[in-house]
Amino acid sequence: MNNNFKSALWEGRVQLGIWSSLCSPLVAEMLGMSKFDWVLFDNEHSPVEIAGLMPLLQAAGNGAAAPVVRPAWNDPVMIKRVLDIGAQTILLPFIQSAEEARDAVRSVRYPPHGRRGVAGATRASSFGRNPNYLNSANDEICVLVQVETREALNRVDEIAAVEGVDGVFIGPSDLSASMAHIGRPGTPEVQNAIKDAARRIRAAGKAPGILATNAEDARRYLDWGFLFVACGVDLGLLVRAVDTLHGEMTR
Image (cartoon, rainbow, N blue to C red):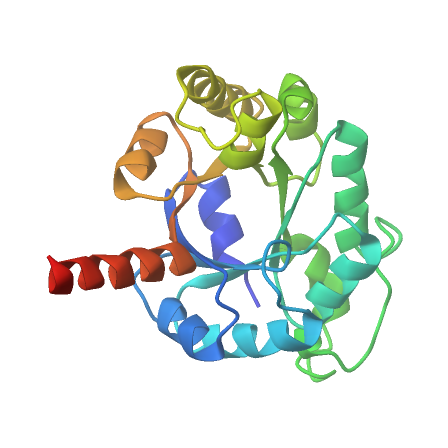
């Protein structure tokens, strides 16, 4: 199956997304049917495991939003399992160097171009019914690498230049922590670094991405040249809605 999200990034088309941490197939289906271009299912900072991740992908498949999965780590075994259950786009956390980015690319590709293990009847290959999957998968899988420390940001040009990397994602929370501004990603020093990162990633010919937690931040990041932007997190949206409703009822 063609990866429309990957094609959009290479064509320079903005992709607006929503971040999901709730681990619920019902929520996954609702988000997949939203008007966002992509929805990320987080396997790093949520309690979902592989067996629970597959129902999220199945549910999201009823909508048009492209599913993206963030494995817990840049680990070839984790990556292999996420791909086998049908993910076409993956976001690998805590990439610190060009070599780690190359490892990520090798993990998603079948030999001789990579080291992904070959399996027959997986959900990714329509349970073995797609005879061309093994030949087409390398081209259709989208690799996004996450830069989230000061050290990695210093190497972002090298990381973005790695062949097979389709996009570089900036993690504002961890980046601010590594810059001694933990919990304050809006600090000017952090925001200036984020703006410069977008410029450098685009100069390398790759798509810059980022997570925002509100529309104001998302619009600013788009103005700075980010191409794929998560505009909010489902858990945070729910918390704010619940607390706002309670406040309205008790004021």
